[in-house]
Structures are given as structure tokens and as C-alpha cells.
Length: 412
Image (cartoon, rainbow, N blue to C red; front, side, top):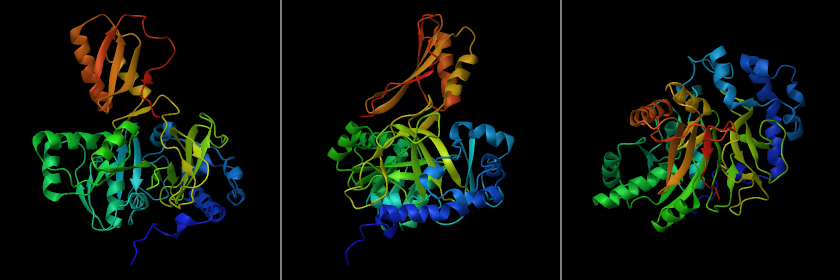
């Protein structure tokens, strides 16, 4: 019997049929959200659910910005009134940087990750080495649930403890790596340098940051086929790559719009804008959720035969918030680092790449002082949970342009 090429028949629907089916569900989604979640009742006040029958009608609704979610949650804990299930009814609760709190409902593959893994060639019988974090943030659980729904065994590795991970990889021989793009290189290099065997990896399903072309090429040389996923803690899987490696295919459980940053207005096809997502999740519905990520729509459908919209993938952030090694770093965090140290003027966090790894350097206006430099580095790690270098520069030398995070990585 030939192996199934697609996860299900939804992936190959006529695009017009998909649009019709999704908007047939929209009125009930909005109606339930307003009735069961006070946050949505406030946010969508005056909206007539039955009128939202097209993308044009959807575009008339207000966006809910991820950047403002932590304020709304503080007013109406724990989920801002946007969950239809109460905190005592969900299966798990998480805390992402911000802080932003997210629920996970009950049921298999709640985050819809199995489809993305299947498109990457992951199948029942594969052993998946999952290096996304399982602690507080939902990254590990998102891919874990999808892999187990496919019938895979999962090594719940999480990040760090590289030497222990190498031992597990040599002994258990996982065929699939799951995690941020950079960490696989660390594992492969460490195995090579210590004489351990990590050649069991045949596929890598990565997310949480950009997969740079040079790194994908290196993995290909090392006989690992790499596929990207695009997900958030609020939405689950948004889009994924298939064997065609030609753009990221939007998941069947969401509607994606690309809007002009700072607005809710859709941009013309092909123009870079902010990713806005509507999710048909009944426990935690998201209606026009502005992610802060940048992308653009690709024309046509994927050569693999899946017919949903394709996007270019992650093209950076619509605001100064950025991802470093899979973790969000916010301008407010950089400002907090400076505020904790007297004598520091303007600061700028520069994010770059070195040796196929993300790096960050805090440039701070201050008199040259080795003690201050060390204490700033410690505060930077404490606030962002990431290590970075510190450079002290002459007072008045940083640009007076309001920018506190400069992402100098190249995404093409």
C-alpha cells in the first residue's frame, strides 16, 4: 500500500471551497467567543457575528495585539478574558516572556502540530528528539503533542545539557530533530568533536527563529533534511514547510492576513507586512491576532499539491521586539537593564550572527569601567535569560533615534 502523501483531504481542497468552509464557521466562532469570554465581548463590542462572511468583512474587525496582551491579562487574569475555558478546566498553563500566560486545552494534538510534522516526512515509528523547552513555555509541548499524535516516540530533551543529550542520541538513535535551528549544529559538532554518533538524524523540524540559508545548506551536507515551522504560544502552528521547500503553507486551522504594521489594513499580495491570524480554537479563540511578525504572501500554490495560502516565512519583527535563540527580547527589557545601573546613558542591543549562532551585544554609553561592564552583562542575562556581550561606548555616541534593539541579521 502506497504511503499517504497528505495528512488529510483538507490540504488539497479547492481554495474557494476552503474559504467558504472557514467563513461558514466564522460566525459561530465569534458568537461563542463573545458569549463565553468577557475579553472578546469587550474587544468585539458592536460586531455582528453573522456579518463576518468574507475576508473583507473580517478585515473590518479590530486587531488584538500580542504586544498589548500582558496588560490585558494583568487587568483580567490569567488570560485576559480571551479563553472560553476557565483556568481550572484547561490541561496546562504556561508563561512566556512578557509575561504572557497561555492555556493548553484537553485533547490530542491541541496545537495542530501533527500536520506540520507529517509534511516534513515524519511518520509513525520515528523517534523524535525534542529540544524545545518544556519548562513554563509551551514550545516543547506543542511539537511533543503533534509527534505523539502521529505515533512517534519522543525524547523530551529540552534545551541545554548538551553532553547528556549526545549520550541519549547515541543510545536511542532518534531520526528526527525538533528545536531551534541553531542548536542542531551544536549537537552535531559536539558529537563529532567527542567521537559520539549522531548520524541517526535524517530530518530536522525547526522553529522559534529564522533558518538561515547557509545553515540549511550545512545540514544538507550533513545528510539532514531541514523543514521550518511557524508557531506561537497563543496560536499553535500557523504555517509549515513541505518537501517542496517553496514557502510556508498556512495551517488548515487558521486564517492568515498580512497587514500594514501598526494597522489592521491588509496589504497587496506580495508586500511585506505584519502577520495577523484568526484561529478556530474553541478553548482559546484568537480573532485577528496581530503577532508582531513580518511576512508576505507568495503567489500560487505549493508544488507539493497542498493548496492553502503560502507565506515567505518569518522576515523579522514589525516592532523592535526580536527573537534571539528562539526567545523574544523586548525593548522594555533592554531599558530595564540600563535602569538598574547608575551612570549608564543610551543603550542599544545589537543582534547579529557568528558561527551560525545568534549573538547579542549590549552597547551602553558609560565611562570605561570593568566592574560596570561585568554587572551589566549579569543583569542582561538575568532580565532576558540569554547571555550577551557588553561594550561600553563614549557618552553621546549612540544615535538619538529611539531604537534600543538593532537586528543586524540578514534574512535572505
